[in-house]
Length: 335
Image (cartoon, rainbow, N blue to C red; front, side):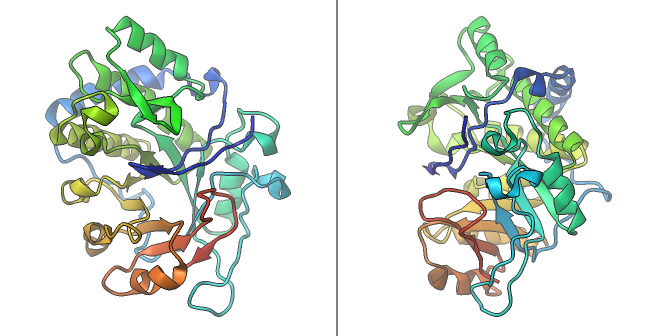
């Protein structure tokens, strides 16, 4: 199966459709995670912060977003760890110090769907850079290896977990119910912990949790009535989870809750805030000494890079392909 990337506008995000075996994610950690989640989510407190030994990315940290492999870089699972391009500001080529990649190597490059991106992470580290692990935490994708566990739980608990299709463009995944009236949230967090444990054992430095804004979409979109308070409980539990495994944790979009979550997360990942005039809400991260890793697709670097580089924002912004693919190139960092 080849990797496929495409845009999602609400929330805006991308997913690498990597089919991997169930054994890759099945882990006793899931059970332990559910127990830990029960304690964490019962309180809905502000959450823990990263320990001193956890990676704390500097505010200015040039990044690369590559979820699709390139067969020219087979030795690193398709990840171009030596990419060097001229920034929008001009001058000599520059290299990213942070790579946001999928947990698993692209099957089209690795020859199978079960190879963690260990080789890429090691190569990234050898070049003095850091690696972020992509995890979808808010929707259930039927192409993931642990999907059957979600489906079985859903069917045995009054069909209370899997909601509406994510969108007409993405009918192969469904919104997850993060409420906990039947233990849905505890189950989800246990499953997420198994994934995060895999990220940690593969050597990643951080984790990006995607689709964490169901409360903004509403029941008409997701199939579930999720309150802002419930979303905060879930998102803070995810942050705690990443920190327990020694990972730095990103808040992906969920702009309406940035003021409540900036203290729990270590950095932000955002798609298209300049295109949709939403960037002001992310400045709280920079003011807290935490970076914003930001990407635009349709907007020209000539349009947004000056603002991204300004003291008003100080974002780590990049331009990727206008067709929303996330290969190694095209890639233009703003600075």
